[in-house]
Length: 216
Image 1 (tube, rainbow, N blue to C red):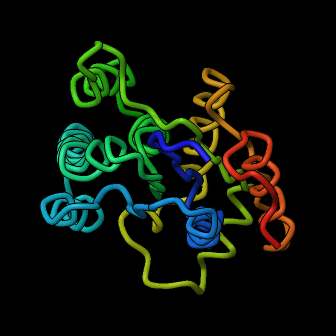
Image 2 (cartoon, rainbow, N blue to C red; image 1 turned 30 degrees about the horizontal axis):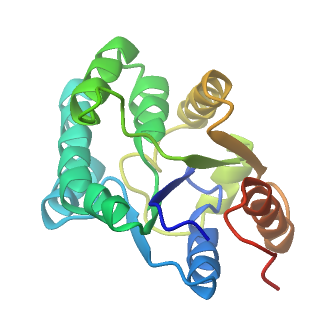
C-alpha cells in the first residue's frame, strides 16, 4: 500500500445514499493499515461547521451562499485536509467542490465563472495547481427517486426542501463535471440495492489499486 496521501470525495444529490458507503470504505482502508480522516463539506472544522449551519438554514442570496461555502472550504483545507495528506493519510470527504458547482451553480443558477475563480483562489497549491480529489465517487440517482427517499427521512433543510426541478439541475451539473474530468470521476449507479452499490464501489477501488485485494 502506498504511504502517500489519498483524497477521495463522495458526491451525489440528497437521497443518493452516498453517506451510507463512506464508513464501509473507511473500514476497508483501515483494514489495510491506512490512517483515515473522515470529514464533510461544508464542515470539518469548528469554523466550517458554524458556516454550514448558516448555509443550510439561513436565508441569503446565491453569492453570499457561495462565499460562505468557499470560506468553509478554505478553513477545511488548511486545518484538516492538507495536513492529513501531508501525513500520508486517506481523506474521505462527504462532498467537495463538485457539490458547489452542482448546488450553487446548477441548482441556484449562479455564475460558474465566479465559482471557478473562487475555486482557483481557495484551492491553489504552491505549484499553482489546484487541490482536487484523487478520486470522486459520484452516486448518480434519478432526482424523482431521490425525492421519494427523502420524503420520510427527516426535516428538510434549505436544499432538501427545494422542488424537483432544482435537483434535476443539480444532477445535470454533476454530469457536466464528470464529463469534464472523466479520469477523476467514477460513476456509481445508486438506484440499486445497497449491496449492489457497495460492490460497484469496491470494483472502483480495486481497479484503482487502492486495495491489494477485495475485502469480504
